[in-house]
Image 1 (tube, rainbow, N blue to C red):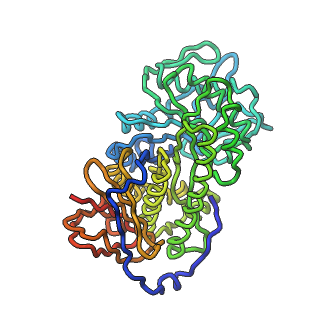
Image 2: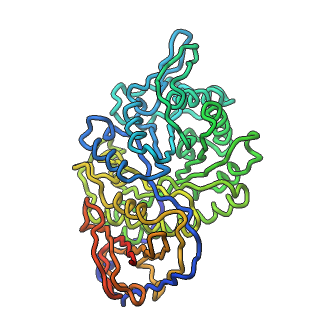
Image 3: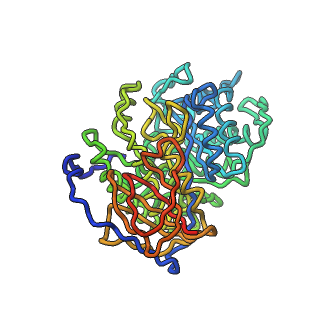
Length: 497
């Protein structure tokens, strides 16, 4: 999401006069809200998650170790053979159903998330279901990126039955042991997985020139077809890339009058990526990331107002939150990896942004707060990765998520937390949890800051993710006294005994 931002030169940023220590005060007895928020992540299909990849084992082990709920799984358009189960239109003689490349990664995902809820999103509609000037020719190599698969605007079957049937068969493959194809032939998988949640398509404001009206019609067709074969599945809709662009998406989709009778509106979803400009460096990013995050939070407030007015029972999933550096776009345009220019401090900064969004979205009562994404790598959104593609270890973005996920849960009480001097350099929020009092503290700047913890702080434990923690988990330490120096872009959880 490219948003304009005010630029500050690195010289000016580093030459700022240090401010007096920020003072944090917490009224542990004054609850402002009770958390409904679950922190989680998305897993996007790409070749580095295939079996045999040097980071395959580490990535899926990290996913298993995280133990998150509502994990989003997205096979998507750049790799048609890894995402689309029927790549060619059926004829009266044969069909092209083939899960041989899709199954291994999907089973690895489902095994790694066993015992936890997942949100499945096979986001790409087969190209042959659309009217196109000529057939879409996809690469024979499943690992070759192909950015123009999603061609066409109008479905060949405007009723949506064909697209609904495709997804119903796909879901049946994984949940019903198989399916019967268009020619009456049985395809047997033997799988009987449970799909508690299904998200209908992805970033539809980008793909196929979709309108709110056409998406709503496709949503109804797909939901009806999947519900017929998996009646316990709940559904997530929209998955907008740029939710601030047009409120009509929410006004139209969330109005039950625009849906067929009985169509559920269980969840609505949308995304946010901070995106600095190419001429900015990390000293600019410390402002750009959080300025753009505040704009997204303002967007979230107006979406929440629409949702509460039209369908207050619908829940919200912000299931892609992160940063896309402009160098990622250069690699996509070049269709190749370019020299890595991501500074090591970036990963802590990106983790700090997620922690900030977690606090602010939790205050609003957002149900699911999803970080994007498990694996990226050079040529495939490296700045969005939660894994180090050079060694298969989780980076600071992962460890921030794990720190939050392991310590803060739905049902925790958010208590009144105030910052001295109306500071915008740090963010803090107190929580009362079943395991005790906790304070999530974020340094939003790329320099150390002095803070004063709540008065009378003694014998507390600190768990900190920052540049120094590297590819390791939060480093722990003890603290006696109110004065604390927080490192650049650090995320610290303070726990009282």
